[in-house]
Image (tube, rainbow, N blue to C red):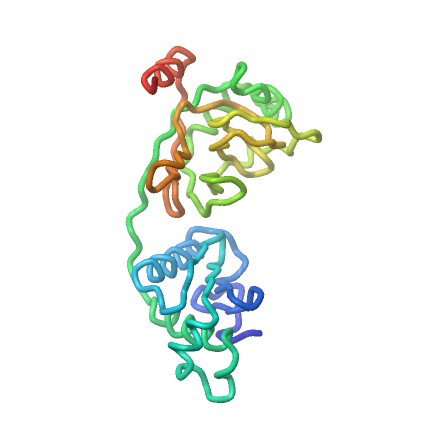
Length: 255
C-alpha cells in the first residue's frame, strides 16, 4: 500500500512507504544507491534516534530505505486519532501517517559530519590468499590491487549479514572480482575481501565466498562494548597497508 509520495527515479524529494508484515513498514527513497540517497536515509535515521514516536520499537537503515518496527497495541492506544477515521483500525495506516509527516519535516535536517575510520590491512600472503587471483582477473599486479584498494574512501551504507559487518560503497571497478565458486567454511575475523564491486571486512569468523586479499588486526565487533560495532552507517572507511611485523605488533598490544 502506497501511503505517500510516489517514487520518481530522478527526484530525491519523493519517497514511498510500504508495509513489512503486520508490525513494520519501510520508507523507501528510491532504488539508486549513492551518497545523496544515503543522506536522506541518514536524516530519517537521525530523526528517529532523537525523536522516536510512541510505539516505535526500532529502526534499521539500509542502502535506500529505513525499516521501522512498531508495537501495534501501543500505536493504537496513542495515535489512533492521527489517521483518517476510516483507517483508525489499521495500525499500518497510523504508522504510515506518522512517518509521512516525519519525512516531510526532514527538509534540510543536518546530518553529522562523517567520521573517518582508518583500518590497517596486511595484504596478501596467508592473510590474503586470493590477492593474486584478483590481480590476474583484472590484468593488474598484486601491488596495483593494494594501491587501488587502499587509495579510496569508502562510505558505510549499512550493517548486516553478520554482527558489525559494514556494507561499503566506493570500490573501484578496476579491482572487482566474482565470488568464489566454493565458499570457505571459516574465514577469520578481520579478513578483508572483495565480491563483485564490493569490499568489506569480516568482523567475526564466518563462512564466506568473497575473494580474500588481506587482514586487519583491528577488532570490528566487541560484543561486551557499547556500541559493539566499530563502524556505523555514515562512517567513511580508509584502508592503509601495514607489514606483517606491524600486524603482529597490533596483535601483541592487545594481549
